[in-house]
Amino acid sequence: MGRRVTVTVIVTVIVTVIVTLLFLLFTVPGCGKRVIDGQQIAKGEKIVIKFSHVVAENTPKGLAAQRFADLVRQRTGGYVEVQVFPNSSLYKDGEEFEALQNGSVQMIAPATSKMSMLDPAWQILDLPYAFRNLTEVHAMMDGTAGRKLFARLEEQGMLGLAMWDNGFKQITNNQHPLAQVKDFKDLTFRVMPSKVLENQFKQLGAAALPMPFSDVHQALADGSVDGEENTISNIYTQRFDQVQKYLTISNHGYIGYVVLSNSEFWNNLPAEVRKILEETLIEVTVWQQRKAEEVNNNHLEELKKQGQLKIHLLSPDEEKMWQQELLPVYDRLALEVGPEWADIIRGLKNNGR
Ligand code: LMR
Image (cartoon, rainbow, N blue to C red; front, side):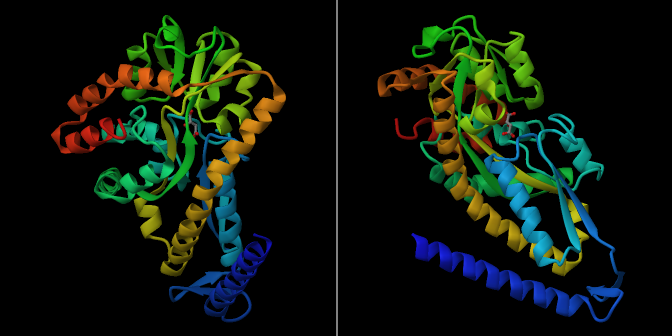
């Protein structure tokens, strides 16, 4: 393990140094000017990329966004500055897409559930118990379905650059432990803006209330909702354990992100810059997909240490009952998105059952 890490660090440093030197060699002909794509650029002139997101910094998405910013700064000698705005500090849910389309920000990474506001087919990733692990998610997104979802974004002037993971969702609430389907009766849960997620809770006998992520803590605290579903990392970093009593480890759904840019902005970047950004994104995505599980596991240990939540791990039998109860959610989505997605949805419905 120690030896492999050292080699990785040495290789990363060597690569960074070579790329930086090459970049500077070709862009700093003499004092005061850079040459990018044959263009003379004034010293100090920068390309600024505003990257807005809604979660905390020490989360799978927050860490990846910052790592991307740091590597890009290193590799462009500071010529490209990625400014990261976490915690909805610049734009909150429901504002990000417009800000990207009108050029107020250049990068965002919304959850796939929120992508359903642009294209309902993204709800496929919200289907309960559709994926048993992250490898299955990646396989679908690297396949025809994933490529089709990404290609359709361009019709809206957006460019899907990468898929980042968070992980699988758990459920918290304030009323009582959730083990049986009947335990959901008459409770209200906050959801992301996705009909599949609303139908999921309705199918279990509960109500669902879509709202921006940044409003959830307050809504849990004042009781306008009884509970919510999220990854451990979001539950921990948003301190939902301060305003919730019960946590069920259910792994019932996936949260992942689409790293997006504005097509016009991205395609008009100098080719050398775009190359460094895209290569660095690939590298950070590999790192991020490995890191996501680790971060969630560490945060679960922290939650246990805090001891605020009464934790129930869903048994295989209980999970089977939830899965069976939730199958109609697949049929409703198939009706909504039409025949072109029918095979994919059917495949996920029968996945491992
Ligand atoms: C949520 O709204 O619950 C999540 O999508 C937030 C996030 O980006 O992880």
